[in-house]
Image (tube, rainbow, N blue to C red; front, side):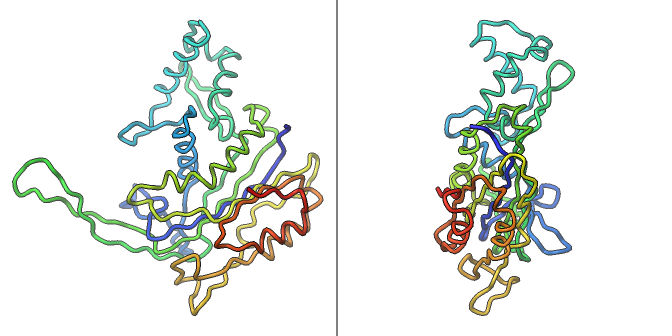
Length: 314
């Protein structure tokens, strides 16, 4: 099936955890100090997705060692070139591979993360760049977030007498409802060979990756809440765009947006988002929606009224 331009909205929350630590700032959660909003990079999000696919048995371009260090791009290219030569009975070196259309096509067929997100691959003193058709902005919380820090002990077992451990900081957010905006580009999809099956795999990974991959001590406590991907008819000029600021948080039971601690402390109002959908509904060819049961079905019902059978849920 043909790939179409599209927009993505993704919400997940983090409770008593560190969604994305800043290694240059004692690994504190990334923050916009001016607004008090929690930040998460697109790199952090895509790492969850890549790790999910890798655990599912797929090969990916960006991989990590057992010591949680990123494998160098030169190492990855060396391994992939060896695999290509073995599978195809070839004997290409890097210079020949850089000029080989067959090798580049093989890379794209093999690596789902490159078809989706692109990559820069080193080849003999230069590089080949694939610009990904799927791109995400940085995510940010939809409210002010408080950080809680406490001393933590890292134990050592070096066998030396009187060595009990060292103290460090364990930085966590009390609660953060995070929102990402993404796009799908039809024109760039042609250059990476992106398929409709790739987008379906992306949809599924967006709601499954964090529960399966955010399982370390500092990452436990993160839950996907909503995922929406909209596809547009070819030639249509109108787009939803980034609707994050159109989401309205309505605190309950005496809470304020500064004191949220749980998804049950507020409701999310989608009225302004639905108004924007109504304004561009003739441009929408299809939409795919997943929402957590705790959010209720008001948003799904509102989309269904406007899109009818063009709305798919999963």
